[in-house]
Amino acid sequence: MSDSTNKVLIAGVGMAPFANHGPGKGLELARLAATNALKDAGLTYADIDYVVVGTAHPLSPRGIYVAKELGLTGVPVEHVTNASATSLAAMHSARQAVLSGDAKRVLVIGMDSPARAVPVEEIIVSEGNFPPVVSFALWAKRRMHERGTTREQLAKVAAKNWNYARSNPYAARQAPEEVTIDRVLASRMVADPFTSMMCTPWGEGAAAAVLCADDAWPSASKHPRIRLASSAYGSDSWSRELILEGAIVGPPELSRTTAAKALQLAGLTPKDVDVVQVHDAFAVEEFIYYELLGFSKPGETEALVDEGAFGPGSRQRFGLPEFSTHGGLLAGGHPGGPTGLAQIWETVRRLRGGDKVGMCHLLGSGSVCIVQMLVRD
Image (tube, rainbow, N blue to C red):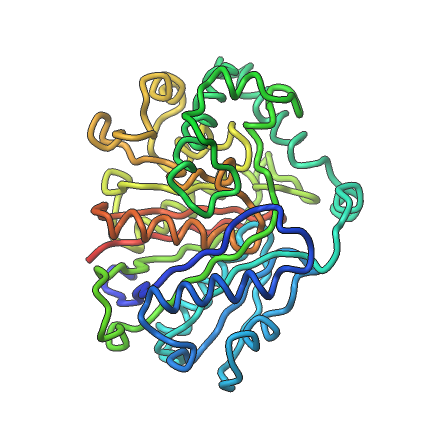
């Protein structure tokens, strides 16, 4: 059954900077992002009747403590955790609360800032797998062997995202001047073929959104109505490429089927999409998701990247969406809990600026995939 007529609207969005704030800043960052989202919506916390909080890190504050920073109104507070997909999962829960009639206005907050610093070695041991950069470097090497992808092409995608981040005031990495392919290639090698500028910086941060029913749209709002037209949620199904323990992004079919479902539920096709945010923690990922989400075919992608597709002006020149327009995870940052809501913040910004249709895509280790479609009515 199509969800294309649903009226779950995004009334406001807000951010706190993604940066190396250090441990113990979670409540402060969450309060700032939530306050910014409420202000953007023209509402106060007293207008909210449901709260969903997402954190990916187990040492970040629980949702109820975040809600108490905003007020003691007695509303339900739901806490969501789903690795890198956490805040899109929180958006999914908030949307369900509106669709069910349980809530009229929902505040969604994603944040992460652990109470203490955690050594990377402790994370690796607890997860029982390679550090993510090693796993993705192996993916990149495989693609370079099978498709002929070059380091220069990986660097071109990274440079694109760094340059998009220059217009995002909350981005973790903001270069004062235009970033070139040569600069990306010259940065410190982390795991061949990835240099430091081809890898996400992690860090801490927060982001938030206010969802509402159609009849609860803020009366004073001057924003165009942005509809959360669909939210598709999937996990692994069996395949020959399935990793049963320690999976990072699951088999390719996971993103392919989840994206197709999100488009179908919204009554859309890939040709309708103007802007896309994806799980691009490492430069090779965009190449993979251009194809899995239905925007290019294997054998065509590298040539399209060379010609400038998926960057500024891509819709006009190629009929293809722009990708990772807030800098993506590569330059915008990837604190975990708020990453998806940063994608929502950016997509709303783009749709308010004139684009019609946006897609947000994230994966969570384990693994799950969530794809959401936003439409400007």
